Each structure stands twice: as C-alpha cells, then as structure tokens.
Image (cartoon, rainbow, N blue to C red):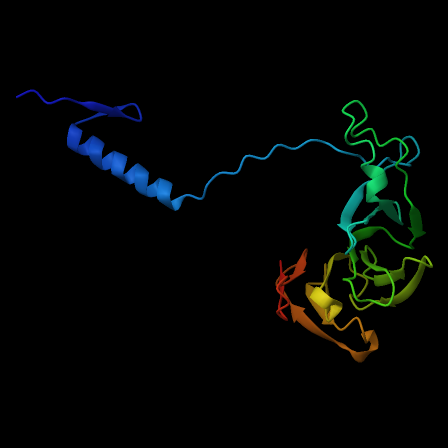
Length: 219
C-alpha cells in the first residue's frame, strides 16, 4: 500500500500528521487577533528655532482637550503652543506636506528648566492650563492665556520629574520622578497635601485610568 505524503513548513509529513498540523494552525489562527494595516503619511512638522550647533530636542507633546492646540516641551526651556489647523493647512498638498513652512508657534512660554513632560489639564478648568514636569523635580501649571505660572510644587527632592498625568475631570494629578516615587494630589486644591507611592526604581511614567476610576498606573 503506497501512502501519499504531504508537505508542511518544508517538512514531509504522512497524511495523518499533516492533517493534525493543519488543525493546529487553524486553532492558532482563531486565537490570533486580526492584523490591521496602517498607512502613515507625514502631514506636518514642527520647525526648529535652535541656532546652528544647538539642540532643540522635544521630550513631550500633548493635544489640548479641544484638539485645537498642540503643546511641546523639551530641553529648550520653552512650552510652545501650535495651532493644529495652521500646522495642517498644507497637508492636502503633497509637495508641501511636512514642510512646516509658516507653521511657527502661536504662543511660547519660557520656563526655568528643561522639560520632561507636558500635559494639558482636562476640560473643566477655569481657564486653559498646561502642566509640566522638569529636570529640577518641579511640577508647574501655566495659565496659557496669561503665559504665567499659576501654581508649582517642588516635592521630588530636586530629582527629575519624568511624567505627569491628570485623571479625567482633573480630580487628581500624578507625577513620577527619579526619586523613586509617584505623587498623587488634587489639582483643585494643591495645598491640601498629597499621597506618595514608592517604587523600587525611578518612576518614568504615570497614567490614570481613562475610564475615570481613581487608580493610576506607574512604571
């Protein structure tokens, strides 16, 4: 009796083994999530204003709650605010997309230290507020309309603040630092104290549950 042989993955298998191999592949396919194919196209760039030989590295970006403004922060000691519509005005023209021409910042706030994180305070604040964490361990909130600091806290022993986040509704805020702690406080009453979560190493990221649950994740 001559048995027919089938090939799978470059290995010659008898019919029974080949059938079992095919069934296993089908089971794995059912468990694997469907693949999404994304096609990205550069729509705009933020122009650098650094002098030749100088660095203007951006460490953090964030959209405001309305989606109309983009904030950037980095080692240049500035929070730059860009009008998103102006950045994308030429995005439909392939020849100019990504050129960044004519898309300078709508406003600029000078800050005293290099920035690791910028984050807009969620909608509901009395005015537009952007928070930032810096290399000196200070968390500061800036009133965007006036371009001045509205409040600051220096509770990370001078160690770099890597990350800042607000809970939905701005009921809580959290910062993570090189001092191996994450601080959680109420930005509506910043002088009322805070809670401290201690970690085994530098806290590089903090993120609140987007569903609104009062629980931050730290890493």
